[in-house]
Image: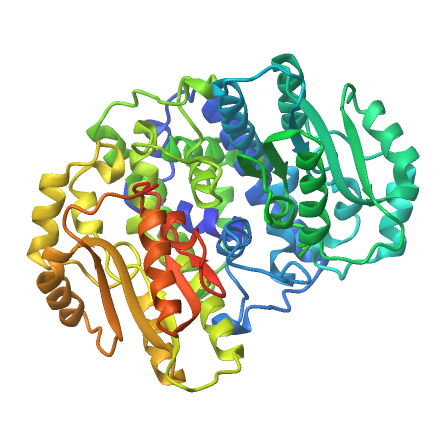
Amino acid sequence: MATAKVVVLLVALVAVVGSCGAWELKIRMPTAREVEAAAERLEEDVAAPLIHALRPLLGSGGQLGRRAGVPCDSWRLAVEAYNKRDWKTVPTNCEGYVGHYMLGGHYRRDSRVVVDEAIAYAESLKLAGNGKEVWVFDIDETSLSNLPYYAAHGFGTKPYNATSFNEYVLEGSAPVLPETQRLFRKLISLGIKPVFLTGRREDQRAISVANLRRQGYSGWLKLLLKPVGFKATAIAYKSGERQKLQDAGYVIVGNIGDQWSDILGAPEGARTFKLPDPLYYIG
Amino acid sequence: MATAKVVVLLVALVAVVGSCGAWELKIRMPTAREVEAAAERLEEDVAAPLIHALRPLLGSGGQLGRRAGVPCDSWRLAVEAYNKRDWKTVPTNCEGYVGHYMLGGHYRRDSRVVVDEAIAYAESLKLAGNGKEVWVFDIDETSLSNLPYYAAHGFGTKPYNATSFNEYVLEGSAPVLPETQRLFRKLISLGIKPVFLTGRREDQRAISVANLRRQGYSGWLKLLLKPVGFKATAIAYKSGERQKLQDAGYVIVGNIGDQWSDILGAPEGARTFKLPDPLYYIG
């Protein structure tokens, strides 16, 4: 559909200027940034139907009364603004949209703006400098990316498969999210200590440490993993761990994650940041 | 820049297919939905520079180290996900983007998805049916739209002017937000009573009631306005009013607004919904 849009745009614009040859008259040399942006759009708009072609558009937006399914950009916004909750999978018709959002420049651009806000906030803090000021980092889709796994499993359109996902985690090959690492290193340089707080289980500690180190992370204060067999919601588990940090005398000046369940539940931390994640929902 | 993108797309695509004439070979009849979508993009992509032309791109994304300013779609996402807070004005380079987001189909589409979620939630409720179940509605940019004012004042790129904005409010001419009205009417049909809770002042009650009625609202339980001269943050004021509702025996099953300050602060309501608003921030 994206290419069709471009085609229709062409038809409409050609109609406006009268003839194909007249196009040249309209063309000026684009700036470097415009070329970069256009290249992204070209990749996203032109390549999207190729991924779409892999799977018919079954549609999943019945509640919208639209045969073609939910509008994917509006669905993603509803997810990021916490309007859409407790969803199980990405709408089938949005696989191509989410794939190209994640693989193209859009996800990186959105993440960079969040991290720029976080760094501006951190730099504005008057620190006690007593070594008690900490910043909580989630791991998956925050410090490390599982995009290689999700790209091979329908970009969130398929139900979560704990077995295959844990096999992937145990490879310890998850790539870094560069924006988050930029924040991580800035905080250390400011004297704020990073604390990893993750839903990964204690029996995944060794591979998680190896993966984090391989990807260039070092200097964290703690790595808090969920006890094996621990039963609780992510919000209950993570807010409980943050409470323990406070009880131990730490001051949580910031908290960043890709899920609302990373940053909801007192004590949240003095300031929270929500990184984009259209791949899955953890309540 | 948007048109330049399309131009660059053209150049790139023409390069791919070799000649302008070859274009016709690529063209197929688009579906009705594609035409509608393309018309929207045509309006947004082609018309945007006309608004841009009204004001030079001074840029405002220094913190991003980008001469052309912050990427406007990422800025809007950061606002909606509550990563960007306490901002005074829309980045100057985003006036065209925000204008066409609001005037084109995008804002309506995003709002509809939020309201579809709210209605699905409301229909899923097991109601006591004792007349005590209420839903809190904000007014500005939630029940009524001040877009006519903001379209004439730089789409949020100019500092807030209380004098001219209040003159506009006193006209009582703000149009309805149709998606919100659809929720409002659905709730009444379900037996959930709407309560308006607004930062508008008590001395604007008469014109607010007239405007709401003119736009087709009726059947609300209460219209709560801020006492003249009342000094408090929006969060403190609105959470205090919601507390009074609870103390009076009402059950706030839902709460919808365009600002995070509408839906933060206990008691928030059993479920909250954040409508899009890239025009202004109220803390």
